[in-house]
Length: 182
Image (cartoon, rainbow, N blue to C red; front, top):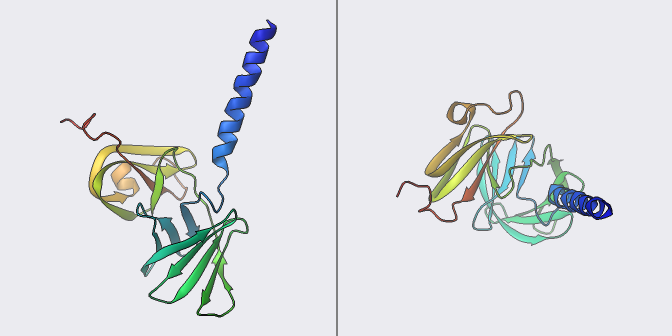
């Protein structure tokens, strides 16, 4: 009986560590940050894309630490700091002091193994075979083995979480020949 109790305690502790270990978003593992008028999303090639309601900018990641991701926008000669710990975004041009641009409105969590790629009503383009998920707050709709331009909206996927801002996620299909109908 004592051995079963120890085994159950060990299993519960391991489960708690694995669950809490993946839930913490830091500057080292963040891949998507939502701001009031758009988002910053990590691309598969290691660059970042900043999207607002009116513009899309390509950014180079220059550094990461426990609290922040540091980006550079060559077109605007601007440095950007995504401060995950403070939930704030800062900018600096040339050698000027950094100034607060805005607050981070949400750091969205997605399905395990998936990477964030689009906000609600946005598209994601890929020439690789991917599985995609659309949703929020642990509720997702999935499509498997897709490529091309994927629109992340309720019309395409259905609405897995009514009344909640949703996000699109993808993961590259590990073995495209399995389950793809080939």
